[in-house]
Image 1 (tube, one colour):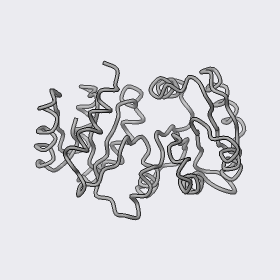
Image 2 (cartoon, rainbow, N blue to C red):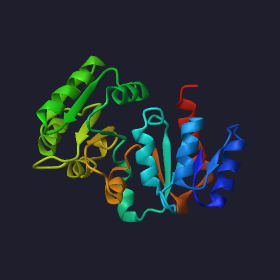
Image 3 (spheres, one colour):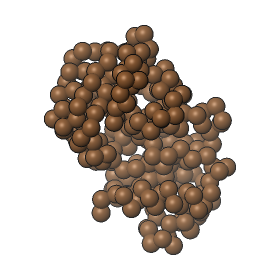
Image 4 (cartoon, rainbow, N blue to C red):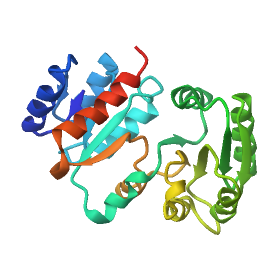
Length: 239
């Protein structure tokens, strides 16, 4: 599914994927895109950020809040500036509080996090313990940290397989933690699941790219590279 207000992008995407045997459905705005997504449950969604009415970040938030749509890979196509481009290595997914067991289950299955280690970074002891228990039920070896600074010390000692990260914490919050983490190249590939109870702003979403498979700049939309990346994701999805 292609959600974009530009008819040229609709044509371009149809040309890319129909020759590969995929059926392409298009929507011209966020409302139509959400309606079609709920009806059709597409294998993958490409999403423009800048659209009239409901913008792409709002569409993304609504997609990820719906348990039936939350595990659909989303490729965001955006005109982002160089300053924000650096955040494209940010969050893999995000969870909203209270944490839903079904959503945890979807993440575990999708990323096959059934072994290895996880680091839970959360200042609220109750939430931390509850999440730890859920993750240990899936066979993960779980470490805990009460703020971003302690979490960085954990990562320095042993790099975890996945990080579950609260945004609002004392000492060093989740945003600062991600920025510090991404300064070390070998830590950039660690998946991060953001846990948030705050309403994310446009700037927050740019920094986190929550739930985004890939952030692509329109001016660098190279057909061959883009097609390969999307096909890789499509082919990895369960049929």
